[in-house]
Image (tube, rainbow, N blue to C red; front, side, top):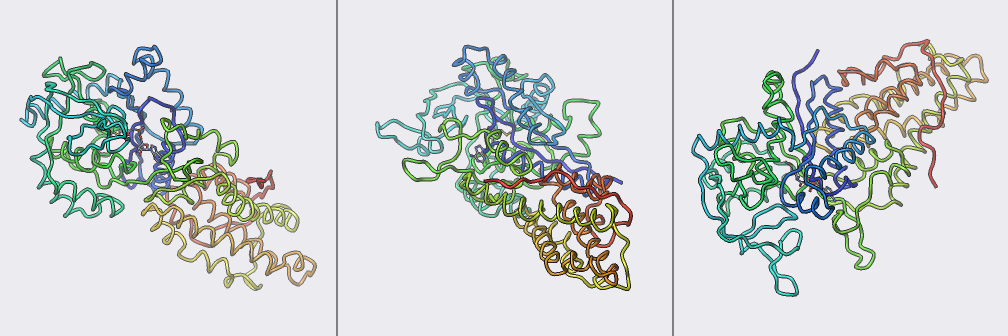
Length: 526
Ligand code: MSP
């Protein structure tokens, strides 16, 4: 039975470039949580998509001699294929140029206009097209030529003189936002980001320009057709579109899924998610999402300077997911990024480290345990899970039952805090215990002594049970190899559990299930 709705999002990605490891990182992290919550019985809405409007995309299209829409259409397969390849289980893919999304944008801003939160004014200031962000002069930095540059991406900024815009009264929300952060200390995760946001809001909020009148690649505002919505005033609303805000036939889904549980974002876009977005929702009278989780950047060491730099297409250091998949496979890729790169901080990546983690955890430990255990079951019990012998050693008291005791609770606490690496460590502890158990109990010696048949049955059963539980726990990170591991020990049907906690209780494996050997799940690299 469903425990109810659980909704989460990735950012919707600018379509100026194809996905790279950095953008894929957010998507896989969100997918692992989506899968985990589904396995806990929630009805999960998982929204992702493409951010297609704004000057950056329009400029990119022009640089390719294409119309903006044509360019965006040409980019859709790059995103969909990357997410399919990485086994991402999104439930809605929002393109901001879709009519249903234009309807969301019109409906939302029209409502705020009618509620009196918008006014028309002249915008004097600076704009960075790359960041699609407005800056006050005092925020800017200067480059070696003395030009003003963006404090975030260091590119020259554009001066905007007296452009007539619509403004959202963001400054009205300063106190309300501070009160909200105080009452919901867990809204922004991790806590370092929360502190950053609180001091930003305390330093004073300016009203926000939410429309542009100097170009037309956006959604025209219903109350002033000469203006299109500012790209962020459009993009954030994709989260509502993705659960049916503008589609009357999805009203029940919207009601159940809003407010959402999680927005996953990179640390560069938290002000939009933790300041502007909550203020927009407060203004319209909607409940606020429960959490925004901001992760750090994947970085790459610059060969010339030796410094770690954010991976990005424009820096020319972007690595395509396919390059890693060719090395580690999809599952190895997912496992490495979710367990070896700490979500809250920046993480340098290297192919050497990937190979090390893959070989140690997946090839030598997990893969090895599966192949040795299934082989022994085939050899000693004709490929059927043995019947345990309550009279023989290893029945109740054994190191694997002890290691599995309370494992789900320990793992769940870590998964829910996005400490995926620590969650994986819980599983690896069980897997290592199982590999040691093989050495310590020497099934090949037990097999030679008919008096030890009961003990041998218990040992093999314990190993298969440890594999069953480990496969369940690994499923959110590595869905297909975990399902395959379950299949090889005759527990195929369990892959679709909606009560992970119950499935991971020790002692459930039944006797007589068909056990199969197969190709190495994680062939050793190097
Ligand atoms: N379109 C906006 C988001 C709108 S959400 C309503 C946007 N798009 S983006 O394509 O530039 O970035 C999307 C996400 O990818 C951001 O969360 C960003 O932090 C993340 N990453 C981009 N490069 C990254 C790394 N090198 N490492 C980790 N994440 C990175 O911003």
